[in-house]
Each structure stands twice: as structure tokens, then as C-alpha cells.
Length: 235
Ligand code: OAD
Image (tube, rainbow, N blue to C red):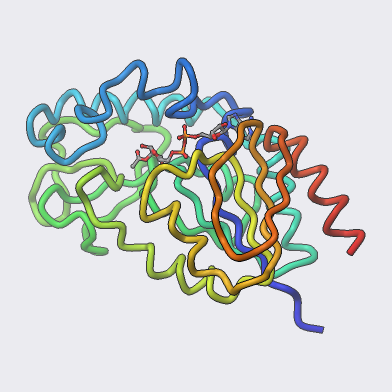
């Protein structure tokens, strides 16, 4: 029998229990770093060193973390469903937990690219854990300054089209640990088929509007995934 398809949209709360800070909670990253300075194309053009340092620090932090129970449960869903993970996170914790189909809407911390043509596949390269820093003067394949492969505010989100194709064919849609404030990611839910079940795992109330029944699990990612398993596997 053909497996049902689950599409999961994840945000920073998915990785919170691995020790990675969220952005908009109290003491979140955007409280301690001006978002305009470190996560916009204008900020990068104005002070590339500051931006490179910010992501170098995030990358070193990522190398010290491991996937949490929630990531592992998301990967385990593949035993029962055809699963696509659409993540706003730039960490690689879904992949390290075993998820085999992950779409990164906002880029990947362990990759670098060209400052001139950030979406040119020929310029996108892996950053090795042994040399986790990008420095001023490091060059991409096209000779321009190497930069983090991160989608900054003011830039296009090229993988959104792939995410739409997944959402359109979902039988079940799950949202984990995102405040649903950043578009186009938060708009992905508009593409699901009317009436399919939607589950939201987040300790806080998240605004989700769609023409589907929305089941809220007001818990952290790990506990919330355990609860979701009980619900799904009893169906
Ligand atoms: P936010 O920081 O806006 O939201 C994090 C969400 O995670 C909130 O709804 C929290 O309640 C929830 N949360 C906190 N702890 C949790 C836990 N243990 N388990 C589950 N949920 C938990 O982060 P995002 O919505 O991911 O983009 O932010 C979206 C984008 O804004 C990011 O990708 C980033 C940022 O600017 C870029 O940098 C381009």
C-alpha cells in the first residue's frame, strides 16, 4: 500500500532542546544581535567581517550540538510515512537524526557560497568541521568573496517552490517550533489541500489559519512528537 505523505514545517523551536537559541523568544538571538546587521544583505555589504564572525560562531556552536529526541522522532516517521521536512533552520540536525528528505528554506550553516552569485550551484560548497570558519579573503569558485550559504532578509527564497510542491501533495501537515512570522515560509500552509489534518507542536500559541482542522499540542518538540506518535499510530 502506498504510504501517506507527511510534510513537516520546522523552525528554531525544533532545535531548542539541542541547545540552539531561538530568535524571537526572550533572550533569543535577535534580542542579542541586531537582525538588520547580521541577517540582511545590506548588513553584509556594510560590515562583512561582523556577519562572517556571527555565522562562524553559530557554526562552531552547531558542531558542539547533537539532534534531540524530537529530531529523532521526526526521522522515525519515515518508517510509516512518506516524509518531507521543510525547515527554516540552517543547522543540519534533521539530517544527522536520519531524515532523508530535508528542504532548507533559509540555507545551510555548513555550506558556503559566492557573494556575487549565491544561488549558483557551481559556487555552493561544503564547509568542513575541521575548518569551520569563513574568513575575509576566502574565495568562491567564481573568484568573489566566500559568504555563508544563508538566505538573508531582502533575498529570494529559491527552495520555496520545492516546498510548495511538497505541501500541495501532503496528506498530513505538521508545524513544529516556529512563530510563523517570517514569509514566505509561514505562507506554506496556504498550499495544503483543504481539510487535511494539521498538527502544531509549540509550547506557545502560534497563529495558524487554514481551512483544515488544527490540532494543537502545546508542548516542546520532544514531548510533542511523542504525543503526536500516539495520535498518528492509533489512526
Ligand atoms: P522564532 O524564534 O521566531 O520562533 C521559535 C518558536 O519556537 C516559537 O514559537 C517558540 O514558542 C517555539 N519554541 C521554543 N522552544 C521550543 C521547544 N522546546 N519545542 C518546540 N517549540 C519551541 O523562530 P522561527 O519561527 O524559526 O531566518 O524564525 C523564522 C526565521 O526567522 C528563522 O529561520 C530566521 C529568523 O530570522 C533567517 O535568519 C533568515
